[in-house]
Length: 145
Image (cartoon, rainbow, N blue to C red; front, side):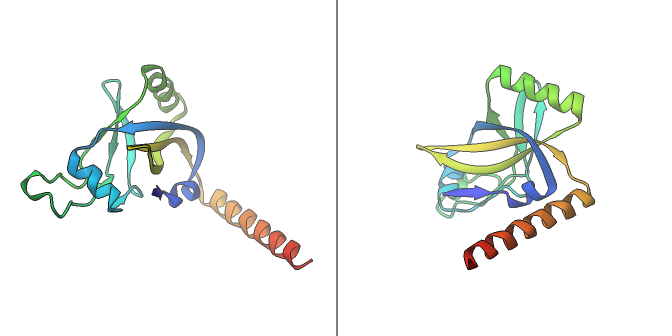
């Protein structure tokens, strides 16, 4: 099961991608396995040389009773120290941002594909749409021949 942030590729230029682990509680992982997760509004920050993911929505687990989790709490991402330093340098120098691109299971663990991204302007978005339409027309014409 994959949860893809389609809006991220439309709104941002992706400079680099990092595969990260995420620290979750028991009811959170069960809820994600049930498909009750959304990463559209999420973003990452670096605080005290640790990376955190904010606004990631993981719905309440129905059988969780009093041990249920908060739905949009701040969650810690698991990265190597060298990767954190590299990301921190990008964020400070170039003014980029951290956006989750995809959430997926690798074995029994949930992984987050984190992108170091630069925002697109409106004219960049129109250019992307134009190129996508041209490519779609070319593929359509190739199928007809």
